Length: 270
Image 1 (tube, rainbow, N blue to C red):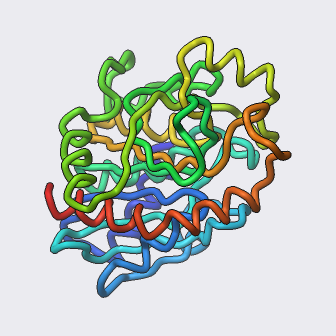
Image 2: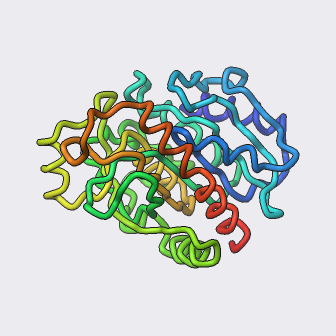
């Protein structure tokens, strides 16, 4: 893993060797935020050693490095998923590379299903915590001592300080923002109604197929993380229709203006 991390790091560093303030992972349908980056350097994933090519609609597979609100950001337009067949060390490889690049902050976004009654399509939601016991641990195997300890505390995976900044930014921009607990589900199939009832019983407010592995590795690597979910559908058994990825994309498209406005304000206020 050190070889893969170092080779990916060296390539990105050869394209941009300045200080980067924030890394951002853009989930399904949320790629338009990358278009707000000024004077971007755009790197195809296929050119970065050991980065897979994204296979999911809405995940373009490019890395953007540039500025938003006078801060330098590095945005992944598309991510890697466990359900695509990647091992967790590859799913989370970009986080290790970001940590090696010295990036202190990570924003991780996703499209998700709403479980809690008030989390309806179009709702932007802060991740206050997660339930990840369905996720194979991305820290499994030999510990990468350069990044963090063997047994890492997970009390505050998502920064309370960044959440407060986000709440204030939502007020400034008049964007509706709620918060909740995000639960990881392996996918690629959507959850069954029985599974959703079980997740609700253990305290999950939202469910999706990403984010948790990346947030765990960011925590292990000493990065400060903000998690933002965009509810694009009601979870199985709670809505009126069958779930499909097109529905996810359409809901993301409708809410992207508010999400972009919110994230730009958060960056400005940091």
